[in-house]
Length: 121
Image 1 (tube, rainbow, N blue to C red):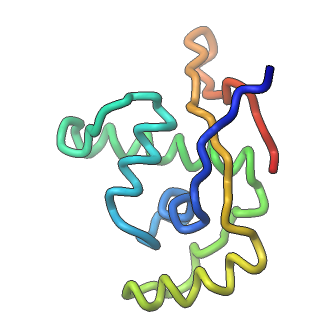
Image 2 (image 1 turned 90 degrees about the vertical axis):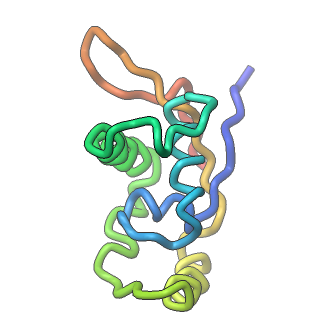
């Protein structure tokens, strides 16, 4: 039986892959906690460096599943919520707005991150 993941919007995913804020900051913590299967909000509980290292790892993980998102939003000027909203309207038409993800699972023997089961939509 295929394990179902959780659906995230394009904006939520781009918060991580483009390292810019396209939605609410809480969306970053929600997505990160889901990917790391924490089940709790660690926004103030982790040291900043550890969080950003995990964010870089999460970015690589997401882009390995959705390579079409590589570079999306990275070079675009996003200075306000309105800029982000305008960008997302066009980007959703091109890339879609639903991205299924599963929590990451650490393979301690090799130090690699992998999906429990990958699903491409």
